[in-house]
Amino acid sequence: MPSRFTILACLALLAPRPALAQDPAELRWGGDAEGGAPYVEADPADPARVVGFDVEVAQLLAAGLGRTPRFVQVGFTSIDASAARGDFDVGLSGIEDSAARRSRLAVTIPYYEFREVLTVRSADAGTYRSLGDLRGRRVATLGATLAYDMLVEAQARDGIVPVTYEDDVHPYSDLVIGRVDAVVLDAILAQRGVRRNAGLTSQPAPLAVGHYVGILAPGAAALRDRMNVVLRDAMRDGRLEAILRRWDVWNDDQPRLYARVLADASPYAVAASSLSASPDAARTSSGPGTLDAARRYLPALLRAALITIVLSCLSMALAVAVGGLIASGRVYGAAPLRIALTGYVEIVRGTPLLLQLFVLYFGLAAFIQLPAFVAALLGLGLNYAAYESEIYRGALEAVPPGQLESARTLGFTERQILVLVRAPQAFRLALAPMTNDFVALLKDSSLVSVITVVELTKETSIFAANIGNWLLPGIMCAAIYLAMSLPLARVARRIERGWRHV
Image (tube, rainbow, N blue to C red):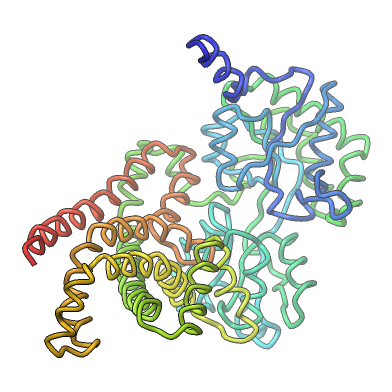
């Protein structure tokens, strides 16, 4: 039997090392390969490595610092929090400059200037020229971006409906098929979207101007300053221009940006007034702090919680109905029906819910365009129906056979036996695991954000990304989930007590 010391030693070896204990000869940079080209993407020829202009900017910085670059995969909305934790030395993944970021992180000088543009269907190009023309319409973007902040402001001003996506591919494909009426993203992403999808047009007038920067932990100002020297040198000698030209993102805006950067010795090189930071970002950085932000975001969190409740209740009702039919078919059906239903249960339980949501919403779009809420309802309901059916089948088979034989002796039909004898006892046995499944479904509803349904967890992640801190948003989100799930558990216990004597 291993000693306590041996066990502790093994656990110490298996535990991840702190970020600060990494090799000082490496420049660890964080990015999101899911964002795709031309920023960071898996190399089609060798998926084990990443390519993109931000990859080459990281290599440029590493060479200037005498280090070896090493990529760290981080979800885009988590890059700020990971940078603050010190999970990597610098974050580079099309990260937009903002007053809020500068208030909580060490931010490099800007190395690229971009324009936010409005993309619409070519047939609507004469109708939708600005956000003001899209009153009451659905406009897509990515969460936790300058574009998202603009749409939230336009929602209050112009009544548009922001629709957030997890990637920059599906906003444009959904625009083509009419799920949204416009997309607002930076010109680089818009150009890719228009090239991939025929029938789309980007309006020439920019909605805003922003800049890409690198972000570092708040205490890494000295490293940030050394990176600024490297970036300025690369602007002067043309190395940065060569990188951007290789990725076909160089344009006439960049020389003007470089001239301003090289003429200004301040850490940021671009005056705050020239950045299109959102009103929310400015208030977050200069206002009373995260508590003020919590008060402003609370109504949005409560609205998202209502969506979570409605979606969870409807999905559970569907799961119970379909699960009951599946269980009855597997207990009473003929062999072919039992085989088919068993196959359904095993397929659904053996594949991820996330994959099923993608297939329902995006995969079937060529045949049937399900609204996002309907796809979420079907995905959750049909997935949990497989699990519910196993609970009900087990409960039905747990009823003593003697009771069933007695009912048959008394002349009951199989339908009467199911409704009057078997089902009530099975319900009593199944109630506790049903309640557990409902609580699990309530939490799994957070996955539907990948198909543009903004429920509680998604709204919380947007809140956290905008203030750069997960602690308070996480506490608020957990409190709301508990407020929803604890009463449910209490009601279920009361129902259980009432059914004990059935």
